[in-house]
Length: 389
Image (cartoon, rainbow, N blue to C red; front, side, top):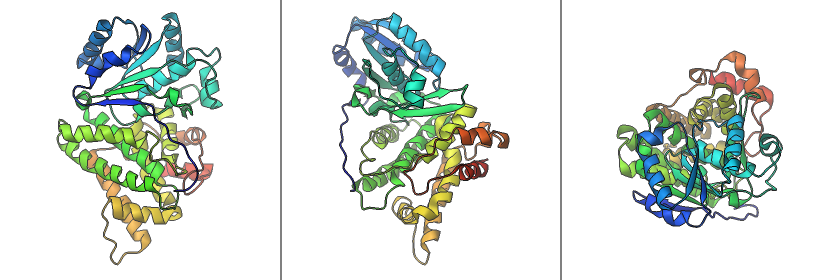
C-alpha cells in the first residue's frame, strides 16, 4: 500500500427482503417535511411506491414529490427540484430508484440552500458546498452505480453537451442510510440489468488498472470482479435467481463505496469517455461504458502490461504456458470481451446513436484524468472514439 489516506463511510445499509421494515426508525431521526424523489413511474407499477408511501404516512411525514428524474439527470431538472424542495421547506430527501435518482438527490442536497448556479459551482469549478446541506436516504431499486454508499453525483448539461460527476469530499453528502432489497431489482428489463452489471465491473476496473505496488485493494478488487462474472452469468440465464441478484447488489455497493480506491491513483478514463457519449446521445450509462471499454483498454495495455497480465491470470484464469506477457494480457481482454457479448452489452457507440461527425464534440466533452497508465491527449481520445464506432 502506497501513500497516506483516511477512510470513513457513514452510510448505514439495510440489506435483504425485509429491509424496508427498517425505514420507519430511520425516518424518525429527521424532520417532518420529506421530499420523495423518483424516476419515470416504474415504482408505481411494481408496488414499491405504495410500500414506501405507507411507511411515510404511518410515520406522519408531510411528503412532497419530485418525479420524472431521468436516467441522465439534467441541470434543468435539478433547478426544478431545488424550487420544489425550497417551497416545501424540506428537511430530508428520500430517493427511491437507481443511481441516477440517488445522484440527483445528492445534487439537490447541496443545491437547495445555495443561492448561485449549482452547475457552475459544483460541476465546472468542482467546489465543495459552503451552505447547509440536506440529509439523503435511499431505497435502491436498480444496482450498478454504487451511489447508495458514496458522495458522487453526476449531472448532465445538454446545452453544453457535458455530463460531469462530482465526488464530494464531505462524507455528510453520502446517504445516511440505504434500503437494499434485491427483489426490488428483479422487475428491471434485461437491458437495464446487464447495463448495471457492467457499470459495477467497470467501477472496479477503473480503480484496479492503476498503480504497480502490491496493494491489498487489488486483491479485494479481483474477488469482487470474479463474483460479478459468476453471478452475472447466473442472472443472465435466470433474472429471478435471488442469490445471484443479491450478490450483484452487494458487489455493486462495495465496488464504489471508496474502499478499494485506497492506496490507488485510480484511472476513470472509461467513465470520462462514456460520459461524453452519454452527454451527446443520452444513452444508458452502463452501455456507454461497455461501448468504449475494449478500444480504451487495448490502447493502454502496453503501458500497464504487468497489471493486465495479472488481470488475465487471476480474474479470467488465462493459462500462461508458452505465451508472452502481451499474449496473456490480450487473452484476458479477449475473455472479458466474450463475457460482455455473452451478457448482451452494447459493444460500439454507433449502436448508441453516435457517428463520426460527433467525434469533435465527444473529444471536447471528455475530461482528461491522470491516474491511469497513460495520460491521453485529444488526438488519442479521438482515435479511441473512432475505434469505438
